Image (cartoon, rainbow, N blue to C red; front, side, top):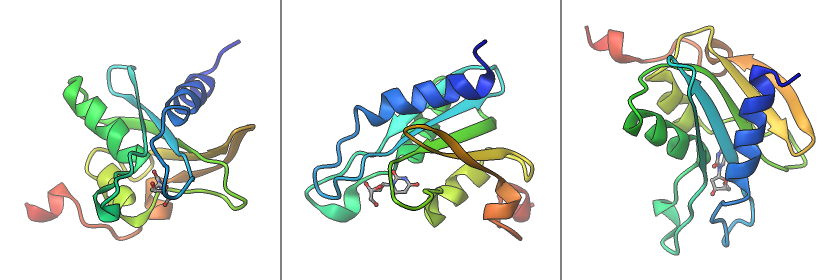
Length: 133
Ligand code: THU
């Protein structure tokens, strides 16, 4: 049986295969489920002007917003590092914009999911839309 997590994993794996990462040689895929149950994916897109490159999570979030989604119910990031790959600091903040403290953030390798965190665990005492009042 295909679970919700399997679907996120497959989407992230497919997106990672499309990554443009000639500089770091570190392809990353991300996939998220929105409030409509739709899955959106993204990959890292690097640039010869290095700081212009974008993370996989940013691509998945942009796809969600363009597709009409506004809430992240779950997100998964997939890479093949020797160490567990979790979203970078900037991407934690990007996720924060559209997620709740309890939203699951899954870290996966090519063989499967390795760890599960919540947004609150990865970005405690965070700044968000409601902070602005
Ligand atoms: N990267 C992501 O796409 N997501 C992460 O969560 C960590 C890092 C990308 C950025 C860059 O293209 C490459 O991985 C190496 O840092």
